[in-house]
Length: 370
Image 1 (tube, one colour):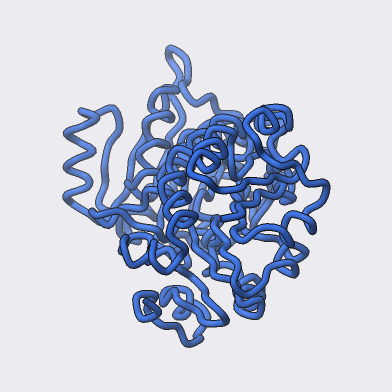
Image 2: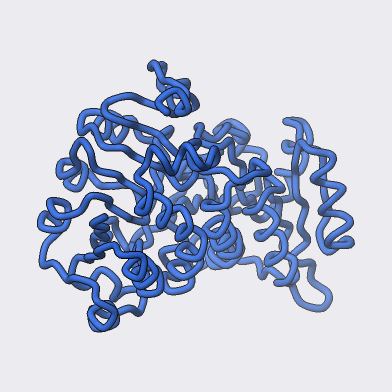
């Protein structure tokens, strides 16, 4: 199969969909691999690294999209990229369609077979291709939140770990999954007073046993969240419903409960955000203020650490990439029910029911196409 990897064009996105190690693995299986020139440079992989292992270097994205039978990316295709997709082509990348109706419409119009990293599952129902970027984003969240708390950036001027005689920052993490756990670990490691809110008693028992009081847990309810907001310096939104829009856990009216210049970090912004006042921002202009509360809502947080993120993502996505290339999408999905769950569109058909529910459009179960 001809596998193509374009240069990411989303603002401040330096990751690359195929690192040299993954490209070499595909070539050794008899496939052809091409990248757009300088696609890997931002992650520390110059064209020379690819040329040395037999990867073709193409000058433009159009050349690459025209050549490739499968497009492998990191972020969702931007409008100019969606216009180059076609029926019979496989798109393998993050999509987050439930927060992006125009993208869904364009993918359906193109006829492309789109497989979303974030809805691929494993045998336990986990999200193995989302997990590495969730780990990165979770660990970054307290760092960017700490930066946002600095007075020069509009925050309250609170130091995460405090100092002797002065209390540390009070951090609330909404969601005890991969993102929330990593965020809580790092925030606690910075010396903050951290509480993780979740609905699963089993998950909270696990966190309590595994981390032995490094951070606290609290059963999540609107009442409990409102009480916690009054003393919070930072709230990290880390909730996820696979493939669906994120639930809104904090309304605009509830911002009035918070201390002036406290910070919201919305890691769920790719799925529409978990705060009513969230809107996607970029690394160029990451924060804004609503009713005196600082919001950090960068939609591609892991892009800030592009090399680490590229390597972590490549480790996770390579087995399915090779299966798709070796077998074609249909046979690969027939052999792997978890990969079937990643199928979001095919030849104009929406195959992710959660996305259909978000937009009130018809969708079919992906297994029905096999």
